[in-house]
Image (cartoon, rainbow, N blue to C red; front, side):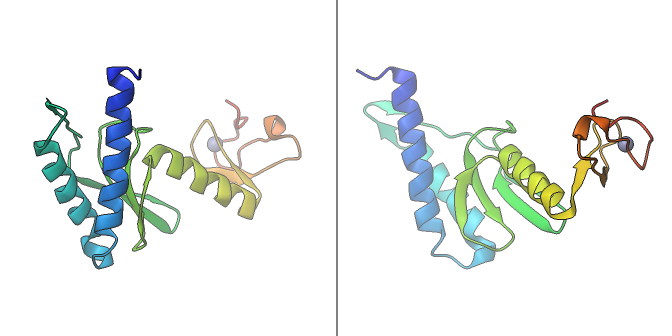
Length: 142
Ligand SMILES: [Zn+2]
């Protein structure tokens, strides 16, 4: 038998997938709001006599280089939530993972590395730990 927590996680996962499917039928600028409304409605329902609730605090935006991610804010960087990159289709993911992925892509494309000291990107050496930051002159590893 799955535990209560496992059941809850499964139901939340199913709810998010359904909200994404529903909301992707809307025009791009209205998708996240549609998903938010769907989840609010779902949160009012009872599942097996228990009130299920997905808590979030509105729509947030974060930019990495030229791209923007909009997402339903859960208050946690790596929590699964509903996201939209630029004006694309909604998907389930965390904004923390998205930011890391975009930063990695940027570093590969530009052959740079993000400085752990000042947070700026600098051309990388063969061995990353020997790389000295062009901006602050510290080792990027800190
Ligand atoms: Zn630096």
